Length: 331
Image (cartoon, rainbow, N blue to C red; front, side, top):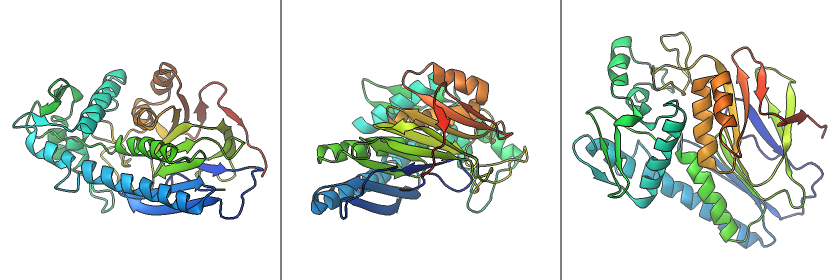
């Protein structure tokens, strides 16, 4: 086993290199805590110095994205947008402009199930301190949620909020972007075999040196239940789940994922995992499907070329895209 990509309480992917020889010094692994989550890069390098430099470059990129997109750093571009966009159109960097444009496209595609303006309500929760808003505060915040109120001028590359109190958060998007960028950095540095993980978002680069990565799928609420996804290479994987750091909301159920329409935690799904060609797509769809539920969520995924889904509903029943799952193989 290389590593598990998700937090306790979520559907977990464990990456395996079944039958792949691991030459001494060839595989390198580096871990850091960045963007409020565990960042891991594991790669094969014939030259150890080359591998260490590539891993360091990945971590530098993760720190750069955190400085740019953290809602907790007053100097970040995201914080500047949230401070100023209700009063004026805020100029965006090229990178931020592209991300907001992609986010709005996913909002339209999902009928608002994915919505970066959820932050007006999301900021009222403190999952670590188990704090939740009262009904009146939540209702007022939800009045400020709505992706159609994000006035993006793509030509001028600026963003303005339609009303006071709106906020955006790229927490459901930035890690997918980060693993995409990390994969590109590794390839530019001559790394052909790697896995990069940012919390529950991962990117497989190439294969396990001649054989595809094999991925074990485990539901921690059902000990011993183990399926295996088809062998993977060059794919992004994102998992969204009702992990353990949630708080009870007014429905008696809570976790860090909220429905933008209600400001509350969806109740119909336990976990969603999306496989896609890029991390932005896999992460955005994992959030959207979690909100939409099994039937509408699987229909959404079926309409997006190159994507597949594994969903565990509230009763623990597993649903998957056709042909995705295979029986688990023994180590």
